[in-house]
Length: 261
Length: 250
Image (cartoon, rainbow over the protein chains, first blue to last red):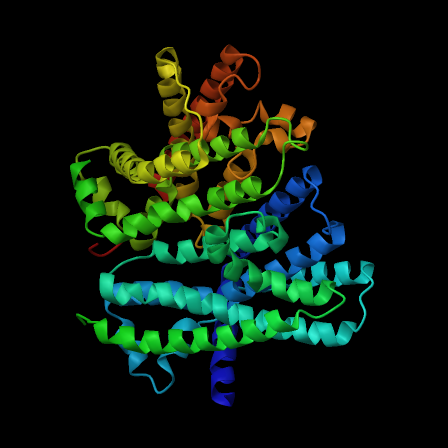
C-alpha cells in the first residue's frame, strides 16, 4: 500500500512540475477547469431559478453541486490522464511496457497523476459543501460527514470502474477514444437531484438511478434527518461487487491485447 | 472527401460512440424537462422545450466544427509540414475533412433523432418555402464555427497546452448559443446583449430564425460576424506560417 501511495505521489509531483514548466498553459488549463465549473453552475442554478423543486432550496442545491464537483474533479485528478493514455498506448502498442512493470498493471495504467487545475476545482467543491453546511442546520454532522466521505470514495471507484469497463473494449475493438467522453458525459445526470427524475418511467429510471445515486447518496446522508440505511447497505454491497467484477473483467480483457512492438 | 469517409469507416464502433457522446447532454435535459411539470412554470411549454433539444442536437452534429482538434494534433505532431509542401491549399484540406465528418455524424445521428421524435411524439411542421432559409442559415452557422475553431486551433503554435482555450471555446458556445439551456431561460438583459454577439448564430440559428423579430437584422449580424471570423482566421494563419517550424519525417 505504501509503495502504491509513493508511486501516486511521484506522479502527482511530476505532473505538477510539468504543469508549472509551461506557465501560460498552466493558466489556460486553470481557465479551462474554471469554465467547466461555470457551465455546471450555470446549468443548475439558472434552471432552478426558473423552476422550483420542492425540498431543494439554494443551499441544498449548493451542497449537491459541491459533492458533484468533488466527485467529478477527483475522478479527473486521479484517473483522467491514466485512462486517456491507456487508450493511446493500446493503439500505439506501448501498453506492454506497463504490463511488465513490477506493480499492479490496473493501478499503473489508471493512475498517472492529475493536473493542479483539477485539484483547484476539488477545493471549489469543498468550499461549496462547507458553505452550504454552514447555512443548513444538520444534526450529528461529524458522523454524517464521515459517512458521506466514505460513500463519495465508493462513488469515485464506481465511476472509475464503469469508465475502465468501457475502456476495456479498446483491447478488442481497437481505437475507441470517444468512449471516455461517453463516460464523462454521463456526469450530467449527477448534477441534478435524484427527485427530478422520479416522474420518469421505471425503464428509464433503471439506467439513471445508479448514476444519479453517486452524488445523491452522499448529499442525502448529509441532508436527511434519518440515514437511508437500506440504500447505504445495498449501495455498498453492489459497489464492492461491481468494482471487483470490473477488475476481473480488466484482466480477462488483457487476453485480447496484441502488440506490434 | 472519399478518403476522409474511408478513414472514418475504419473504426466504425468509434463513430457510434462519437455520436452517442454528443447526445447524452441533450438527453439529460430532455429527461429533466419531461420529468418536471413545467406547464405552469415555463411559458413556451414542455413539448416545445423537448422538440427544441431534439432539433438542436441534430443541428449541433452538423454546425459544431471541431477542426481545432485536428489542427492541434497536426501542429503538435509536426504533420502540418507535410500539408504545406503539397500543391494544394491547406484550407481546402481542413474544410473537406471537417465537412465530411459533419455529414457523416449527421447521418449517424439521424436514426437517434427519428427515434427521439417518435418517442416524444414531437410535431414536425415544415414548409418547403422555408428550405432556402434553412440551408442559408446552416451554411452561415457552419462557416462561423469553422472559422472560429480554425483560429483557436492555430493558437497551438504559440501555446503548448491548448486544451484550456479549447474548453473555453466549447463551453462558451454550448452555454451562450443555447445548447444547454434555451436562451428564453436567460435573464432578459443577457438575451438582448447576446443578439449582437456571434453566439446565437453559431449552432441552432436555423431553428430559432426570427428570434429577434427581424430576419434581415439577424442575417446582417451573422454575415458581419462570419466576415470578422474569416479575417481573424486568415490573419492567424499568416502569422502561424511564419512562426511554424517542424523537423524530421512525419
